[in-house]
Image 1 (tube, rainbow, N blue to C red):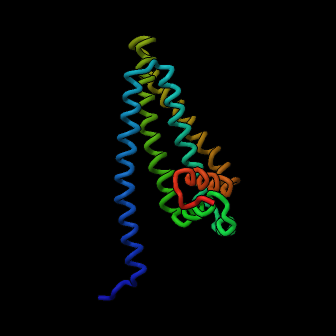
Image 2 (image 1 turned 60 degrees about the vertical axis):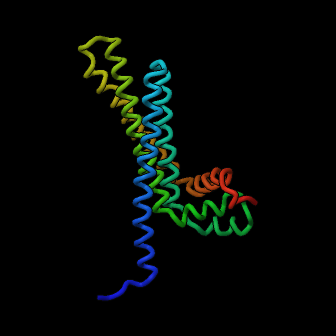
Image 3 (image 1 turned 180 degrees about the vertical axis):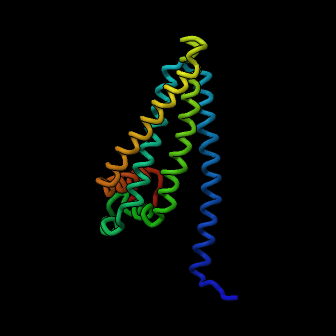
Length: 188
């Protein structure tokens, strides 16, 4: 039996730990966002539910943009900015060093949870539409609402990917700057 180098064992252990963490994070995010969506369905008029739906679609698109930018940006400019103590640069560099995990979190965890919550909000809106227009329109309402949600999400993400690839450095730096508001590590 051959022994694995220490670095390789550590990488496998860290990879397994990330998977466990991402499963737990996803569960907690889905739980929280779903609870908010369910509360909103019970407490607000349908027009407000439409705005909440658009918010979740927008959040999914935004995190997709950040995830693509992190996965495609280079570290070199951030090393130089970090040396010059530019606000957000060292956190941007940290995001890039963990690009696989950050891209997974942004694109898959947040993006998928937003998609699931959007579907739940869409079902509520479709149910409301079918109640307003009669029983025979329930199927048509569900098809129409899910098609609008899908087209807005896919179209927004397609446009977002184009923006993310063209402006990856600025997007990653903006993400680092936002994180610097919450973390003392990157204060100039």
